[in-house]
Amino acid sequence: MSEKYTLDDLCQVVRRLTAKDGCPWDSIQTHESLKRYLIEECYEVIDAIDNKDNDNMCEELGDLLFQIVFHAELARKEGAFDISHVIDGITKKMISRHPHIFSDGGGKTIAEINDSWESIKKAEKGYKNNMEILRSVPRSLPALMRSEKTVTKAYKNNMDNEGLQDIAERMEKNIYLLRDINSFHKKEQEEIIGNFLLDLTKISHFSQLNVEFSLTNALKTYINKLENIETANAAAGEIAEDTDFEDAKV
Image (tube, rainbow, N blue to C red; front, side):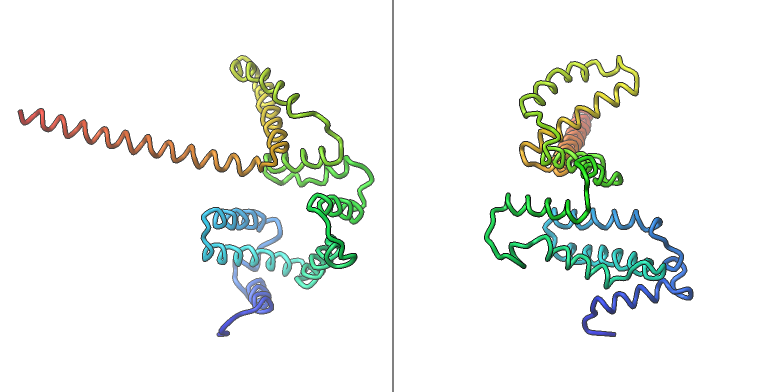
């Protein structure tokens, strides 16, 4: 056993696992069957970051890297590409999209750097119009995340010029629809709630907040609140039982 393994060692391990005489489970996996694990590992990395747990983050990044190497190995067997192409591609992309570092060397603001990034990306992808940019947002993303990326691209490319005040006023009107939501058919209910969530995404955009993280934090607060209520109720129940016991002795 090596004292410290390398990326090449990991690639060899995956190649052995996925061989015909390798692990019965690993050897029958496909890109499609592995999708759920790739997503799960991404969220577990996020969880480790949120918990500020460096040891766990190191482990979870390893699990995520394993998934990347696994997909690259499957692609190698298909004759599509291998891990070296993945590494080469991302390295070239980062160099290309950071001309202020690797070419002209000019000092630029973050806003200018972001504009440059989008311009270079647009040229790389060969987008012919803004709709192609919007449709490039993956449909497989969670709805809130997809909504945020779509809204950001729409505003960045001047496809949407609706202001914060306009959105807030519409949401105030839609609150009346929410109060009477059960009077609508299911399809109409979905539309009302969907539009409300989309407007919340737009407001998050104006506030430069991540709507996904906002909901995650709200859920954490909600769960803690329910836990506190349950604990308080349990304590109150114990007190009541003790009181009854004392009363019975009298």
